[in-house]
Every structure is written in structure tokens, then in C-alpha cells.
Length: 151
Image (cartoon, rainbow, N blue to C red; front, side, top):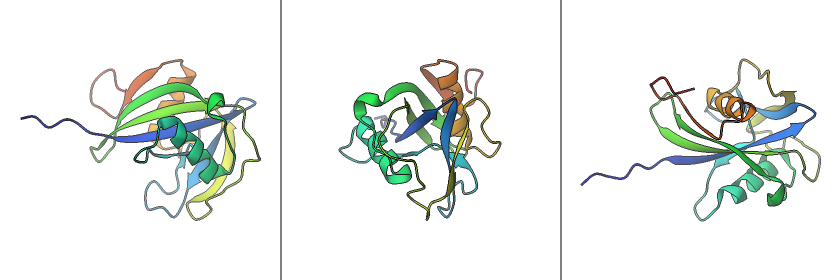
């Protein structure tokens, strides 16, 4: 009997302001430290992807987003460099309550608004792939997998 394929589900939120997006510089986590990523995290048991997006943004950058203000923009089927498959749901929002702050300084060195089409060289590749798909209007893509269709 063949075992069903299972993946980790990630949720990423692209906060947009005047052509810029918010990135968080990872620090002190033991994974991808020194690299930028979007406010993001793993889906928890019993949680929807929308609930996860709202929670992660609140926990990481201190703002509250009404679920109605989240736009689903792309999905990325990612294969990590370690060979672990993941599925990332990317949402975008340009409306929220509160001021953006680094709400997790023990995990994040700083938050920066950067041009959406010019991400820093030290951006997590998975993050960069999702942002690129979003900017190109591509609803679903793959990243890290071997083959010509992979980003």
C-alpha cells in the first residue's frame, strides 16, 4: 500500500505600502538567520490558512488584519534544499489596523519596507519565488523541484 504524501503548510503575508512590501530579517532562530522573509509561519492544527495569516501578522509585526482584507495571491509547492516538500499559501494586504513593529525581536533583527520588485539579495529563495509569482500574476507555481517548470 502506498503512503499518502504529506507536506508542511506555510502561510506568508505580503503587506503592501506604496509599492513596497514588508520583510523581516531572521535572527536567532537557527534557520535562515540573516535572511529576509515575509511575515509567515506554519499552519497549526485546527487552524485555517486565513486564521494563520491573521495570527502570524499579529504575532510578528503587531498589526491586525481583518480576514476580509486578505487577498489570496499565489500558492507555491516548494521543495527545500534539504528535500522536504512544503506548500505555501501567499496572501497580500494593503489595509490593517495598527503600526508595524518588530513584535518578535528574539526572532527578528528588524523589519524593512523594500521595493516589491527589488528584494534584497539575502531574501529566502522560497519567499522570493512567492513574491515573483505574485508580481507576475501567477496563481500557482513550484520552487526548488527539478524540472523546467520549477521557479
